Image (cartoon, one colour):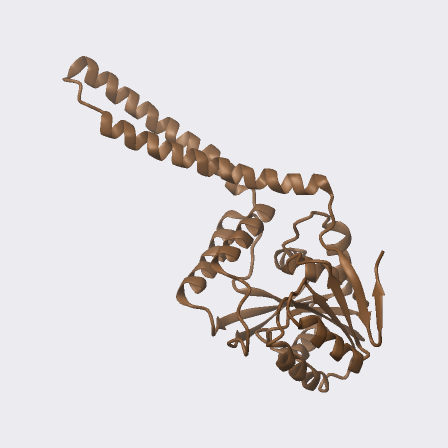
Length: 314
């Protein structure tokens, strides 16, 4: 059996030496043929130099060097396209996806699971705000999406070749929420729980701002509920307007009319805030449609680097 490791790298020059050392040691325990694919996602530090030195030592490895930063989802997608293994394991190179778990993932696959999810019970370097936001994201996603997702499932996962082929050939959208797709593709799923340690070096590439953008993208590609929110809010405010109208007519004919300046300002402020919020949601979906219609590539590989070799792509 061939096991393909898809490892995304983005400005990890400080963590890479530790990661490569642990990866090499842990792979000694695996009695399978190994293929290692590093995706250098437009790193601007010395990551590519460190990876090239490793590739020249280990003939099992190669590097897909992106022309610029295309993002984590694009990196995993490129790895799937270039994998030839019977199973594919996607992971990051910051050691927060423990390489020691690779053997357990392979054993879970051999027990009959086409998908093996790595579920993060705790992340040592997450402060309260990030932890809360992650929990809220999955709560919102499971509440308003027609699909169900495993809370705290990470981008550290294993899939079989047949699952990979379905993802690549049948899910043709530009924005692929991979961890969501593989959870709802329908095959048998295994789960392994783990604790993500603190980073050994470097800084997390996911700020709160990037997490928010990623959350919007994930929700807009898996659920239509945000679009329907406008309809629900419209009905609610229509009912409220009818009540206010009846009250105003009653006060006009049967009582002394009261000044409604404050109420009017508050009502208009809330109405316009909700209106622009709903327009923003619609804009997010239109942006997704715009990306799909352009048909641009999810990533561009500048060159593929193998042992003592570098292939420029034209």
